Amino acid sequence: ALITLRQLLDHAAEHVYGVPAFNINNMEQGLAILNAAARCEAPVILQASRGARSYAGDIMLRHMIQALAEMHPGIPICMHQDHGNNEATCLSAIRHGFTSVMMDGSLREDMKTPADWDYNVAITERVARMAHWIGASVEGELGVLGSLETGEAGQEDGSGAEGRLSHDQLLTDPDEAAEFVRLTRVDALAIACGTSHGAYKFSSRPTGETLAINQIEKIHARIPNVHLVMHGSSSVPQYLQDMINEFGGEMPQTYGVPVEEIERGIKSGVRKVNIDTDSRMAITAQFRKVATSHKTEFDPRKFTIPAMQEMEKLCLDRFERFGTAGNA
Ligand code: G3H
Ligand code: 13P
Ligand code: NA
Ligand code: ZN
Image (cartoon, rainbow, N blue to C red):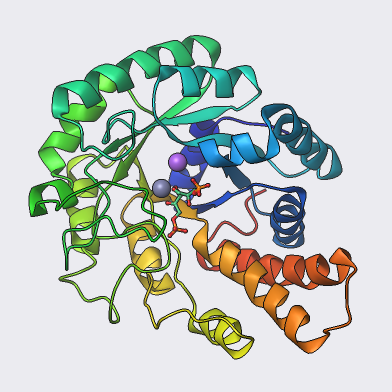
């Protein structure tokens, strides 16, 4: 059954667990996530970016989610717009059956220019007011994702904030977070703590200096009843980097967010944990393996079946480690 983000995260808070929010672009990712969820009885958050919506099409996405819900009637599913850039994106998502939207007002509509406080409060409050009339949930974001090492948003495809970011922008302030939630009435708040999108988050294993889980603890102490969201939460596992590179890839060595740091965050109010890069790597690692080891193969299912299995294994691990398992 489809449920809202508010319903899901209220349950997660009451029972102190986190929910991975996996990005979805196609049927294979949907099947992998739901198969993992069914195996361990976990509720799920499926999220689609603007890019995913234009890749699959809103009608296809809507029916895919509906199909997944029908295939797994016992699994609560929240369908969420990832990084909505304006009111129109958020409202059209709701019109296409999404039960939750992120209004990311930390950046302007171009999703590159850091926004000021007044812009963020005003647009997020407007979206929250409209969404709540219809019964959908809203996630807002205060603070800009980016590296505390370099001050850069650091996404390989050039998306994310442009220019150098200050420490103030890269770490969400607890008092401002409290005021932001009071003014906007969001159901969940994404915070900045040193993570960034994509595979290249940290140039060495993160420390307390580069990944500020203690900032999450401070925010949680200030607003204990607010559901916190951690973006850029892929762990960029070494075994997937190794598999990709063993089979012809050339990914430079990189470090993501260690799962145990996310577990610490979950103890401090993190309820939604956004993961896209890890799924992409799981799929690509198996594509490369099949392409390199079976050079005569041309049936796409021979690629997608092991890719789905690799992604399912990753999803299952996160459901178990975040405490989501057993809560469906
Ligand atoms: O926030 C970024 C997500 O990983 C979605 O990425 O916009 O390439 O679909 P995308
Ligand atoms: P990753 O790039 O770390 O998977 O983060 C995804 C994300 O935050 C989507 O909103
Ligand atoms: Na989101
Ligand atoms: Zn994100």
